[in-house]
Amino acid sequence: MEMKNITLKFGGVTAIKDISFDIREGEIRAIIGPNGAGKSSMLNVISGFYKPQEGEVWFRGAVRGPVKPFQVAQEGIARTFQNIALFEGMSVLDNIMTGRLTHMKTNMVAQAMWWGAAEKEENENREKVERIIDFLEIQAIRKTPVGRLPYGLKKRVELARALAAEPMLLLLDEPMAGMNVEEKEDMSRFILDVNDEFGTTIALIEHDMGVVMDLSDRVVVMDYGKKIGDGTPDEVRSNQAVIDAYLGVSHD
Image 1 (cartoon, one colour):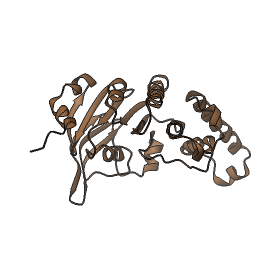
Image 2 (tube, rainbow, N blue to C red; image 1 turned 90 degrees about the horizontal axis):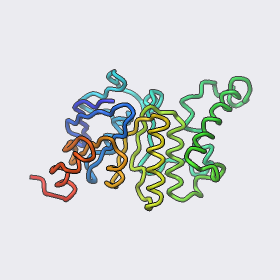
Image 3 (cartoon, rainbow, N blue to C red; image 1 turned 45 degrees about the vertical axis):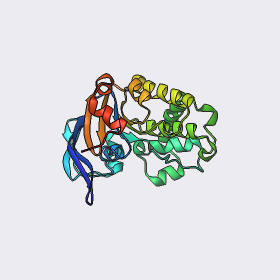
Image 4 (cartoon, one colour; image 1 turned 180 degrees about the vertical axis):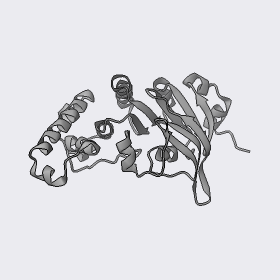
């Protein structure tokens, strides 16, 4: 994916100003910056939720026109959210099954009667979901209502639901926010495994710099809606503009 000269405005406020960067197939690409830098707005542009006033979004070699979020999902882009967006009253298994909706081809009548092609499709989707449950080591809670789970496990279930869509590009919005050290280590391991074993390209927003530097192949840094750094973790770590942004140096 390539973002070309993206500018996004809300009324008189410019959330993103003329930013360009790419996401290469198979990499883990981090988007970082202080609070209010425009990171989540950028993720919403990538996922089709926001349409920029200027610039182009290119995906798999073609410019992307106006799209709805569900069409982006059908193209092979899935995401998790900064604030957990799960169905609290449903079981872990049923929550993850909702990630298969873009792959379901039979109509609602056939699914309600659950026979023929609908039954075959349901079983195939359930097998894929069960493999993800095993992969993320959540077998013990598969029938537990999500509302009864601790925060760290809810985050893992949300990751599972996104993986159920079999995305080519996975967007993670602060996947480790609010986690303790052990939970962060587990989530980091799963993110690396998803990238390595599934070959999934990952773009993530994360505030824990230690995690970002350990996980990422490349990092793009935003501050006040502008791009102030882009490169490998080592390059970004030594970038003076990035250092100033995180130390709170005043803007003239």
